[in-house]
Length: 354
Ligand code: ATP
Ligand code: MG
Image (cartoon, rainbow, N blue to C red):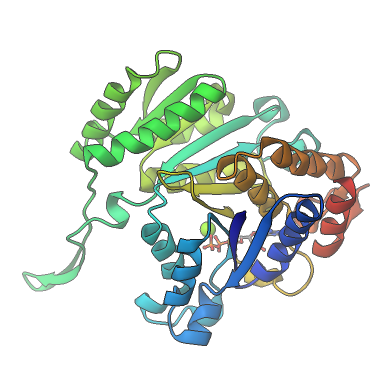
């Protein structure tokens, strides 16, 4: 049995999740043993319980094999104290489930080539994967805070990685590269940050176990530049939490379609949390405008990485390619001459393509 916890969250979350659930239900009807259970996370969880990641949600997520998540947050929650912010719910579930490996493919679908902000020949055929460490680095390091020293306020955070943390994310990245073009680029800032000197040293040690993968290294500032200059030089990029946060957003925009990109966050046993890379898009929530494809493609990643159902994953991905080829577009990826559809109609199109 494939036990999936579904956490729709806030904003457009419920609308896009509904379409992904229809896709999973179709697979279930066709014989896959899928069991869905629903829970609260983010702002809707704060409304109901006072906490963005309630104990009941943690229990549900811990007992499931995988979590399908929509998005969290919205202006309604901006004034809440830090520990109640919806985004805390997301940080908490990643940390509690030990989801240290964040995989973000950035693929340019040929039908959407005009959506990219770069010239067609720079991005045509782009297919890169960013592997971001997700549970360490400056986002979690202690000490941290804002305090008064010598009569003025100072803010501080700690960038910290242990070699075991670096080693396990490096293994995920080398394995991903081995299944793709066999090229891995590790991104750091070893010229000024000791923490990332260790990062580079450990990645070089791990590389000995993957002779079939070609390893290169790049400083993060250069990587940010190379990503927009010649993005196709990359196959898999591996980096820490903060650099990965920034570079994966940059890479996603090369494809021009924030509503198209899925993500996976995995633990040591390939249990995972799957979510679109975009946020809760409060500006279009409740209007049947959101693009559900990133969430539907996240469900495909779930079938591939957690459940090892490559065939089912490809069935979904091929259906998405078909609807794009047939001209279906939500507003975010629309161009003249296309069939503009809403969230639900896009879901309908994917279901019939399946
Ligand atoms: P977060 O902080 O949660 O990442 P954000 O403020 O960075 O959120 P998003 O919520 O991702 O941003 O929205 C950025 C823009 O992209 C908004 O204008 C939003 O409407 C649009 N957008 C995001 N997701 C989608 C989608 N699935 N379909 C259509 N438009 C989207
Ligand atoms: Mg954002």
